[in-house]
Image 1 (cartoon, rainbow, N blue to C red):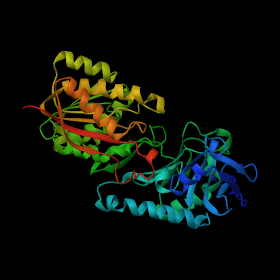
Image 2 (image 1 turned 180 degrees about the horizontal axis):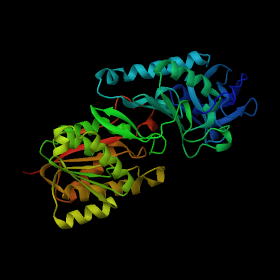
Image 3 (image 1 turned 180 degrees about the vertical axis):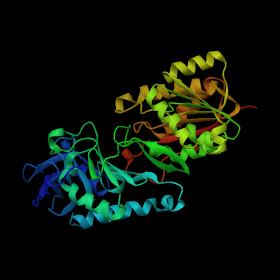
Image 4 (image 1 turned 120 degrees about the vertical axis):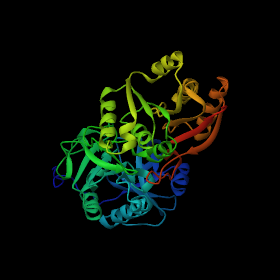
Length: 413
């Protein structure tokens, strides 16, 4: 277990900050980010993780946040309005509020894999806490949290009593600001040597919390996977960008006759096969014919179209295509191409599901792109449902919204 005793403690001296009028308006409206170009002046040179107080033109308290001198988002706002003390009690209240939001999901009793803290959207910018049964994963997107980790860990341990808490780090976190912390460190308990098992909608999955993508599993698609499962009885299903098989397993458990999973990564498809095996005690899963196809999704779909294949359900869940604003047109073109190929593979009257996790692409632009691309193929879609974020991925500011999905029926019989 990594020791936090050697980590720096929060600087008792607050950093006074003045920002532009526009930035102040955004802060007062609840936006959690202040960019470097919006900083007018500071009382002194702030260090990583210092608590920075924003004052207005009348020298009145406006907000308090974490100072990150290594990031263009220089200040991560924790609180705005009246002055507060940021201490262990403050963090305890933040975690309790986040857990209260997830209470309806937890009380269902069929899911113990979910996001406990969703960064900015739960008032803890740059920090994500995911749960996989008794194992937690803390992912940091800024080293500004390092001086506060001792208090954060104490609060988490008291509230959730995990067997282990594993540290994951975003690529942009500077190593020299981590004071010896490393990716995969156990901050509480002992780091798991094998993937951990957890439940999602009553099904069993594994998560490699040390080496897996994100924190080990894509938790945000849980509700959409459940919806696909409910439509899968007797169906043939194509799962494109299948990753570790979230949609595949739910479709199989829902009674799909056959599922074909396509992904470029052989290791992730191996995990998908293991996730199916974890649920093989279910008659529906045991009876489902599973086929894994390793390859580029676009090329494999083009091949399937040429072969004249048809499926009752086609699910397309690609990675983000637009990390920056200038990439949005290219992302929309990629979504249009996927729709063009996908609808050609759906039986008349079948279900077509397409997702986007590109925050730069709005829900409206995505839905319009999908609808227009389908219409151009002369296979128009009837959109029956659109979805966004699940209860454990709340959204409280515009940039926090990224997930959207379209559920549609292919016209005809």
